[in-house]
Length: 300
View 1 (tube, rainbow, N blue to C red):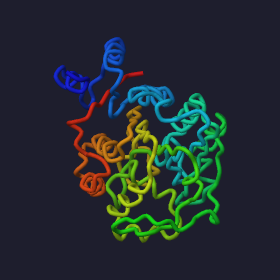
View 2 (cartoon, one colour):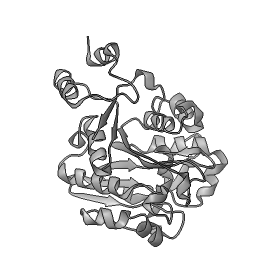
View 3 (cartoon, rainbow, N blue to C red):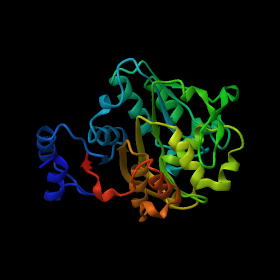
View 4 (cartoon, one colour):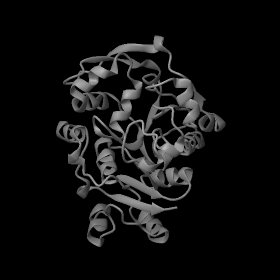
C-alpha cells in the first residue's frame, strides 16, 4: 500500500481534517517519498501558518534552491489596510520572503501592478515595509519593462508582460482569497493579472479564458494562498470591515487549479463554481477534483 492509499483508507486525507503533530511526523517518516498535494495551516501567526502550510507539502527547500533569484508576487491592488482584506497579508509576504532567504535565495523581489496609485497601495497594504524589513527588494513596476509576449492562448495570443518576472529563477504566487464582481472569486490564477500591462479591461471581454491563458504561460514554483482574512463582499476593493471574515488560514500547493478549487471552499463554493477553474481543469492546467488529492491540515 502506498502513502496515498494508506491515507485514504485510514481517513487521514481530506479537507479540513487536522493531523496531530506526532502522527504527522510518523507518517512523514514512513512515507517520505510522497508529499501532500495541498497544505493547509491555521493559526494566529500568519508567518508561522505560511511556514507550516509549505512544510506540509515538503518545505521551502523543495521549491527554492541556493542562489535563486525569486519573485514573490502578492496582490497589492488597492489602497487598503491589511484589516480590510483587499491585498495579500503583509505578514504572509514577509514570512515567505524570509523562508526563501533561509533556503539560500540570492535575492527576493516583490512587486505588483496596482489598480490605483502604487505608492499608496504599497504603503497602506503594509507590504512594502514588511517585505523590505526582511530583505526583499520592493519596487514599483517600470512601464518601460512591459514587453509583448506570445502567450499562445485561446483568447490571449499575446500580451505585454512585466519582463522582470520572466527573468528570474523562481516565481511564487501569493494572492489573497476574496470575492470579485466579475470572476466571482479572485484567488491564485487571477493574481497573474498583476504582471500584465496594457489595458487590462480587454481581458474582461473573455475573463475566464483570459485567466487560464496567462496561467498556462506562467509556471510558478509555488502558490501560497492567503486566507488570514478573506473579503466576502464588495470585492475586489472592499473597504468595509463588516465584509471581512477572519480565518487565520494559509494554503500552499503547486497545482494552480487545485489551489483555487480549494480556495473556493472557503466561501462555501466548489471549483466548478468558477469558470476559470473549470476551464483550467478541462485544458489540463491542473485538477479541480480535490477528492483524489492528499490535503494535509495542521494547526500552529
